[in-house]
Amino acid sequence: MNPIGDIQQLAMPFDLIVIGSGAAGMMAANAAAEALIRGGDASARVAILEKNARPGIKVLVCGGGRCNLTNAGDLNFLIAQFGRNGRFLTPALRRLDNDGLRQWFADRGVPTHEEHDGKIYPDSNQASSIVNTLVHAMQRAGVCILPQWAASAVGIDSRDGFFVQAADRGILTARHLLICCGGQSYTRMGTTGDGYRFAASLGHHIITPRPAIVPLLVKEAWVSDLQGLAVRDVKVTIDAPGPLPRLATGKPEPSINDLLFTHFGLSGPAVLNLSEMVAELLEKFPTVRLKVDFSHTMSHDQWRNTFDDWRRQHGARLLKNQLGQTIPSRLVAMFLQLTGTPDTTVCSSVTNAQVHQLIECIKNTGFAVHATRGFKEAMVTAGGVRLDEVNPNTMESRVCPDLFLAGEVLDLTGPSGGYNLQLAFSTGFLAGEAIAEKILQRHQEQP
Image 1 (cartoon, rainbow, N blue to C red):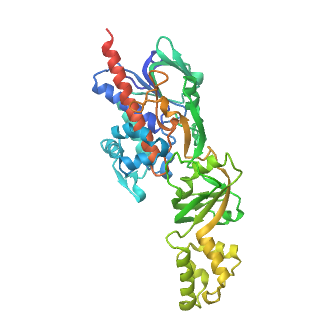
Image 2: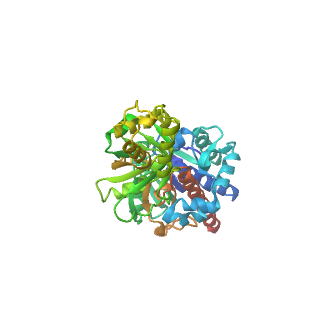
Image 3: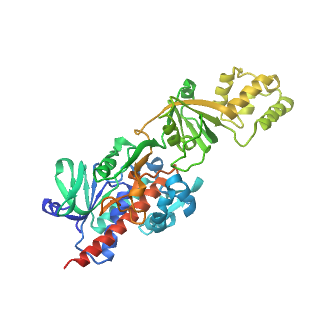
């Protein structure tokens, strides 16, 4: 296997072409190339195509640029995060689970650590550590890395297996093809749904893609005044008529996590983890109502008792200061404004009607969501290649032999928190090793 070669080398058929050098593609290329080296096959050739100028562009922005590469939960917990389709991931996670992934990077000089909610980050706190390690590993294994090679079409080549039309770069051929060029999220980074088109052209059916883990737009104009305010540990509930669709992500409803106010609406994990369901509901309804409990650990009655205690014990204190000990001050100011309570109100003078309205704001603020920020800002894409058309033990297509699929192109979606990168790494690793096994077997059978 050779790194980037001359035109003559590229004209020769490859044993494997990987389309997309994201987390799944780079891990797959490494797993395949390293397995071929272990199998003693020095003649096998692996190439990875990337439409951007460098591999791993999307990985570089994960986790705020720190790369939350997985989560510390056990196997059953990880599977549960993927909801209705989670069991499909069992073989891939057994082959490379979160501990195995952390060890893979540790063996290559990138130790990791656990943070809040089981999130795993590289000790460097730099996503570039993850990307550089994957790229260097491919280079050491002799993978032919082809940046700025935007695949435009794929198909069956009667002699060499598959062809890949690489825009204006010409045609490459390979015995095995792995499609793992992501979904439609972060379109500015090149993930524009090409993988769905390629898979469909080779006989696969696609579950309609929709944005997931995406910020939401709301009708309430006042939220823009709170832009940038993060509120810890809130409970978000969807208030919709009829039964709710079952989340592909498996994240339970209601969602309890942090919320972020933006200039257009709502974001933060508590909202993002319900956004896929909201996107699905918005296909049926013009708006979807969300209810937010900013103090879910205290009941309505406990809040009423608290206001009564303040009246008796702290009557001369400003109400906004008392509330500010529990609720962020900017949010308190907004609640006072929404309820028509003067910010000069002291605890002893607050009326029962004002108490009722303030408690409703704290426990039951409603938002009318009218849209998502779409694929442009979605972190992942829900939907994709139907899983019953893919062998979960190898990631090989059941429709087209020697075609493999991995990562976000599949109809698998997890919540935020490292789960989707684990999905990409695990399915990519499994696909890479399965492809290497087929290559080795085929070469052994040849005279």
